[in-house]
View: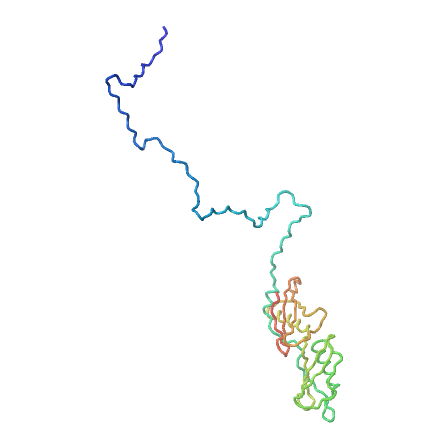
Length: 264
């Protein structure tokens, strides 16, 4: 037998019965009161006499460099060549042992025939100039010219000119006594072969290092000039000619002393 649907009892009318007092409305605490939205914010305006800051200006500097391109390289592009590693040079190390050396044609005493009345045989003096230069420098001067007549005088001096390696040079002559003994010395020129020989010998003795040396202008055998004259040299390892170092020599006095320093 089917059941009848359950009908809920009617909700009583909150309206009070006649003669009955209405119930008081409950009081809602302030913190439980419905939230009230604040009034909409008004736009801000600066005080009188002031202006709003201007908008930021766009940046006008140079653009950033583009990054590496993607894809295949353009036609003709080649990768950069690798840099060679710094070389370690034995020559650069050993040139520090070089010291000053004397490379002018040295002082040589010669006996010159005396002529009557008490004058020097100038042809003999000129011949001695040629001999001394050839023996010490390995080069024979030409066109040697000395004064035509020189009276014998102890301590007396005079000069002779000549051509050496196609350059004009001079020689100093000093009379040692009144018997015709004189001292002849080259003046104002440096024999490059002597510089090279001295450099090689110094490196051999001081550093036990075998080297080759090439000094002065190409094709020249001498450098003309006195104090302050510069001589450029290249020193190479005899066992490795590609290992080289530059050396700069300077004539430091009238006696032909040359001092060296590294040019690298």
